[in-house]
View 1 (spheres, protein in one colour):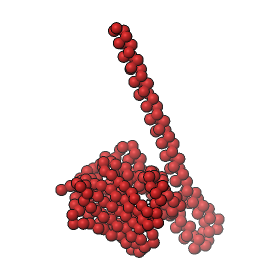
View 2 (view 1 turned 90 degrees about the vertical axis):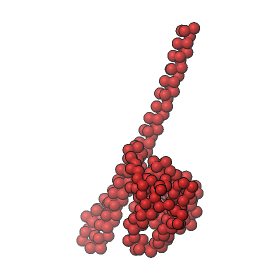
View 3 (view 1 turned 120 degrees about the vertical axis):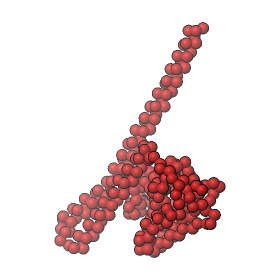
View 4 (view 1 turned 45 degrees about the vertical axis):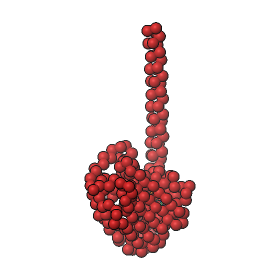
Length: 260
Ligand code: ADP
């Protein structure tokens, strides 16, 4: 009987070991697929501005240098491409930190109204130049203090507001609204811009996913902004949602922990 028990136990151990091995193998395969995809996406993203810069320089060397207008126009385009590469590289640094779990939240109590005003002020120049309007609506019942990582929430608000401008209509409007929802704070960033088709909504937080690639690239986007936003909100154990009507506008809402 003892031998039989031992045999049964050994059989169970082998089965467990084989299951663990199986799940480790599939985990490694998944990681490998992810790594390949990531590198593929990154090189694809960087290729466009690099080839553009090469083209501008060749045009200048080919005689464009002698013409003052061509000169300036091509240098300006070169600068735009370099700025795009800087955005991509910066966003890549952020996303790799977030995806490897390296981000340690520094939680503190802070005034969310002040933070939102700070982000809005940062875009004042751009907004004035393009005739865009940003409204900040806060009901009296809305709490003022939240408990979160201030730097990361700044990034969330900034990415959402930048998108509302990038994918907004000409002289469009962005509204930021804060509300109290049960014991949480609900923050909405909505615009009356181009909107997103329902089919594309579920993929909107995937890294490198874009509805309109050329529009995003023209606007200097890296395709990582919303993936970064989602990671930060997840790290806070909070929720983010999107709703949109194609041709009419988009609304992002996320929750934060309230603080007295
Ligand atoms: P990108 O750098 O391309 O802006 P994001 O991750 O910030 O990358 O957004 C992914 C895509 O989601 C964008 O390319 C755009 O197609 C769509 N999108 C994001 N925000 C909005 C918005 N407010 N209105 C319409 N489309 C949006």
